[in-house]
Image (cartoon, rainbow, N blue to C red; front, side, top):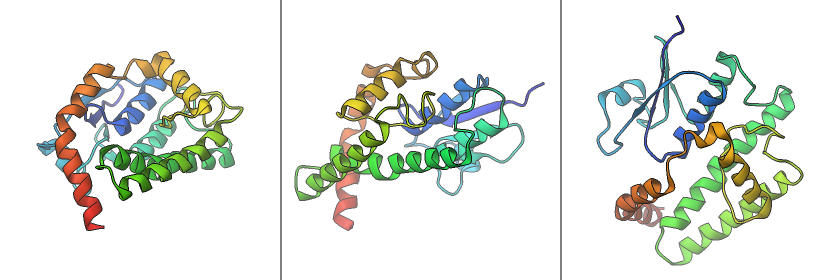
Amino acid sequence: MAEAVKLIGAFGSPFVHRAEVALRLKDVPYELILEDLTNKSELLLRHNPIHKTVPVLLHGDRPAICESLLIVEYVDEAFDGPPLLPVDPYDRAMARFWAQFIEQKCSMPFWMAVWLDDGEAREGFVRETRANLALLEARLQGKRFFAGDGVGCLVGAAEFPALRSWAEAYTSDETVSACLPPREQLVANFAGKKDRIKMAVNAMVQRS
């Protein structure tokens, strides 16, 4: 009997989505355990005591695997099915680089720009986001996805044509769309957290 696979996540998290898509692309049966991150469970704190964040992958009796990109790599190597990352070592390294680039150079300034009050700091994050998205736009020219013609597990969105085409191709994929929450639920979820997130983001900028 196959070892049980569980994914500890939270509604609306793009990082949890990345891990969930990896499992679905590999056709791995799994149980999704949704967390309330304002009241973290003993299960999450026990399996990710360092960062106390999601996603967390549990596979059998092994210690938990944390961080979405590490989960993707583990799922790719531990389970049969179509490869999630390129087989060629160079291309595989490039896929890792661009995944980290999106996470570190695009996602953070994007969300800072979304949640910050108008002002010089917000404008700086807007400029940074647009500059980094332009680099992604150039990277996608001539490709359907970042790593070639396969869906892969990179996450991004933008107003640029190549990125917009990528987003449409990604979200229309049958495997991907199966674990995308309805837009109205996402909007309601973020609306409920708006004031708390804005306060935290503005406080973070003021301390820096």
